[in-house]
Length: 159
Image 1 (cartoon, rainbow, N blue to C red):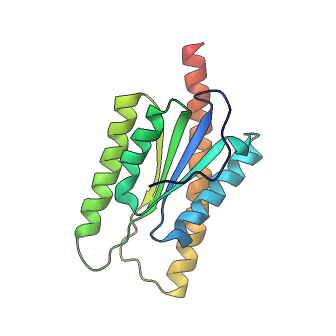
Image 2 (cartoon, rainbow, N blue to C red; image 1 turned 120 degrees about the vertical axis):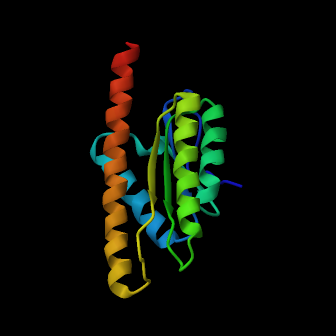
């Protein structure tokens, strides 16, 4: 189902899980790279980021719930790229994923950050693809900043 790409062995709750959909991996890989680069720039030990791939965005919320249940993760980042392929199903998928992520966050108390994007009228042209690849890098960086800010806030609330 999922595969970890980093080593384990640190104290429970001090790791971050990055879950990404395999569909449109050219986009989700960019977000992961932006996230990891920003975390490193801000001084976070990137060896504490575990990356997991799931088939599509729809599988992300359940995977997040299972990872959080392991008590190893202080936060989860969810990444997907749900496109309008000419049918309205993408709206239902995107809504189900984001609603599921919010439910996981509220049910567990562990912050879950969404980099699940649903661009309107995406076309796999060179211009659109280039724009969204760059956009995903920025969204990954934004998720890193939000993650670190929320974890710092939580540290002050529990101190």
